[in-house]
Image 1 (cartoon, rainbow, N blue to C red):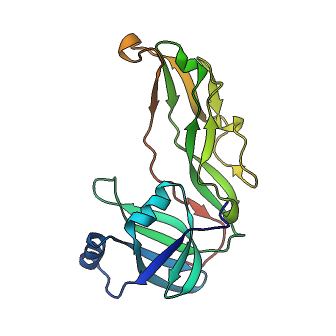
Image 2: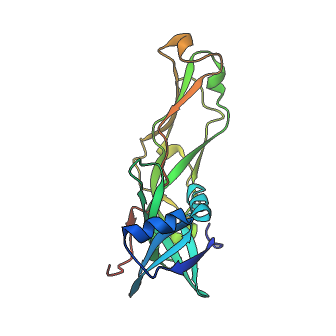
Image 3: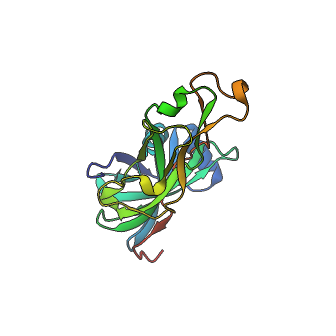
Length: 215
């Protein structure tokens, strides 16, 4: 739930361009663009450390405060550096919390699966996020997948998960979120309590919006 959206203090960027953006980042500021709802696009900067902490915690809806004027915004996109592991720019759109949107939300694997207590087993979780639809005020930071009761050869599909209130699953209900299998490599792959294999998750961003902002 996003009734209490994190507040980010924004500062208007007087100068634009690659050189000035680099200086901002070196000073601990993240370049950001705010647009939408029939208003002019505004280029600002926010505190990098604080903003990235919220993003990595799954926050997508924020309150931007620029010179005392506050607006509710939604994280639409992020730009990574050339290595692909550092966020160097973000796009935010002005929103109303009652708007409906499509979003990709990360999956959080929780619990100690009973199947992993058997020797030479692996936990597979190839999918790291789900596509959902909901009102912005109901947008979750993550979708929890509890694997506590998952046994060897057991599978949890997307359709098996109870979505949070107000959230509709858009991903294929047959997508595999978690599975415990025997390790093909024997003792070289697992030693007693099993191992985990899964893709590294990137911060999820909003993939599509329902409202017509004219942008």
